[in-house]
Every structure is written in C-alpha cells, then in structure tokens.
Image 1 (cartoon, rainbow, N blue to C red):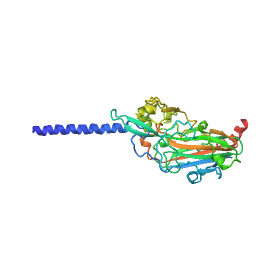
Image 2: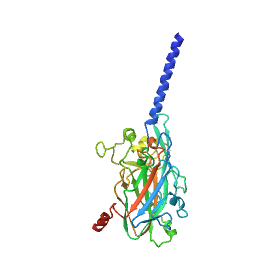
Image 3: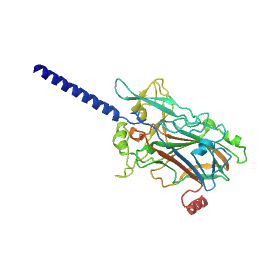
Image 4: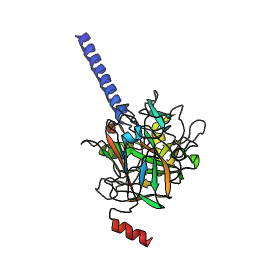
Length: 353
C-alpha cells in the first residue's frame, strides 16, 4: 500500500511537471509576435498587383509600350530586356530603412528568429536580400515608367489601397508597405534604351506609402502592442482606429543575434560592434483604412520618369504577427493628375494655384 501511495504521488508530480511544461510552451508561443516569430505559415498567396495611370499619365514596363494599366503579366513578361523585376509566388516579412543604394535599390533584410536557450526570449538575426528577376525573392520589386506631356502634380487616388482577398480578416494588409524610388528623368523622345538605363543611385528620392495606417486587429491591440511596449492611441474613443505607430526599419545585417523585442521597439539600435542596426522610418504618405482621399504623390516633369517600385510586408510593423500569416492580399495603385474624384474641383484647385 505504501508503494502505491509513493507511485500515485510520483505520478501526480509527473502530471504537474507535464502541465507546467505545457503552460510554458503556450507562454513562449503567444508572448511575442512581430516578424512572425512562431515560424508558422508565413506566406502570402495569390498576389495581385495593379498599377493604374489616368488623366494624362501613361505607364509602361519597358518604355516602349504605353498603357493606362499594368498588372502582373506586364511586370513579369512585358518588361524591358535586362530588367530585374521580381514577383514571387509567396512573400515573407522583410524590413528596410528606405535609403537608396548606389545601385538605386532599397536594402531589404529578412529575418531568422530563434529562442534564447537561457532566457527563453526571442532573438533576431537579419540577412540582406538581393533583388532577383523572376518568381524568386521575399518581396515584390519592379520598374515602371511614367510619361506626361507637361509638368504635372500627380496624386495617389482614393482607389489606391492594400486589401485582403477573401472574407477572413487577419490584418496582414496593415503591415504592408509600398515604396517608389525615383531613378531619373528623360525626354519623351529619348531612346528606350536610354530611358530604361536611368539610375540616379544613392541620390534617388524615395516615396514610401503606408496604407491602413490606422487599423489593427484586436490581437494586436490587446496582446502585441503591450508585449512590445508600443502605445496605441485611439483617434476617438471607441472608434477602434488609432494614430500611426512609429517604427524603425532594419538597415544592417544583424549577426550575432539581438533581442527581438528590443529591436522592434527601438530600445536596441546598435550591435556589439556599435553598428547602427535600425533607423527611424517616417513614411512619406500614410493613408487610412478605407482610404477616401487623394494624396499628393509627386511632381513630374514633362517626359518620362523611371521608378523602381517595392511592395513588401514590413517585419518591424507590430501588425506583422503570427495570426496574420496565410493571408492573401491585393496591392492597387492608381495615379492621377486630378487632385480629387471631382474633375471640376481639381480644375478649380489648379486655377487657384
């Protein structure tokens, strides 16, 4: 009987340890989120890219065939010879500080997330990615050419948005970013080879757009933001919408690993060799969920301007969290010379200007 008691006590203790281990796994699995830390399905399928130009703007992917709309096939198969357009079948989280390189590109960093064996906290390493032609890569990147007959102020219209595909809202669209690197200008009469070769390098200007800047899922509001010490402020009580959240983009390859939480919330900004690993990023354009306004995009000179366009999921955004994975999203960009949906209002605004 005494032996049975000892065995029951032993079994009870074992069950307690198993329960404790189970709870510990749950805690580690739900305590941190950014950069898709649980290594779940981190892909986006059915990528839909749509860029539209209207009201006196023409758009091309090869500086030869001019259209009003370009879509995935134009970017993949209708581009100029020697292009480095990548439209992957799947994308994963990356981050950038938004500063152009000598090659006129943005440095994009992917991540490797692991647990610290001592503390149980998550660590992050980052790896510099390279733009690659075709269906490879972790983000979308392609060149476009915009042609106007006279100097024009261009607007990002209210039809421009990043939206979910399907009925389930997982919030991935809230971590989306788009950047336009202005690589230079040429006369409309210039040879196509001259136009496609445009590259202003590190002096290129960058327009970065953050769509859905006021939107977060309930998981982000109740769990992710507090976990990363990020303060969310409602635009009005009970609205469920919030002011834009400041973030730091990755600007340097991190190795050895650093504390993930500190990198995301900006309390860790340098590595052991004093290299600055992140930098504050302020998007040029922020639009709200269900965007309803026309936002000034750029002033184009008469002729052709080359842009390199990047579309990605920003790993340093608090909306880039586990529950958002496995989503399908659509990128739509519409550019117009009109400053509003009302042509008469746009005309009056131009006259008064």
